Figure 1 (cartoon, rainbow, N blue to C red):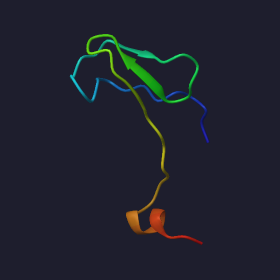
Figure 2: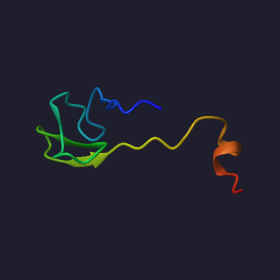
Figure 3: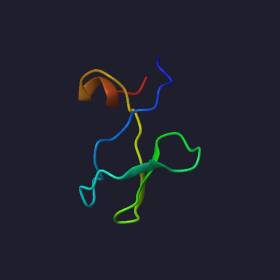
Length: 55
């Protein structure tokens, strides 16, 4: 699995493209325009049924 950081193209709240990584927290981003912070997380690959099965 790759350890490279996935980079979002725009803020999900205001649509601006001026984004910065938030500190050294993996997957955390900060928008300089609307000043909101959020995180991205990989949940897995496959179908929704495969991802929600426990076991």
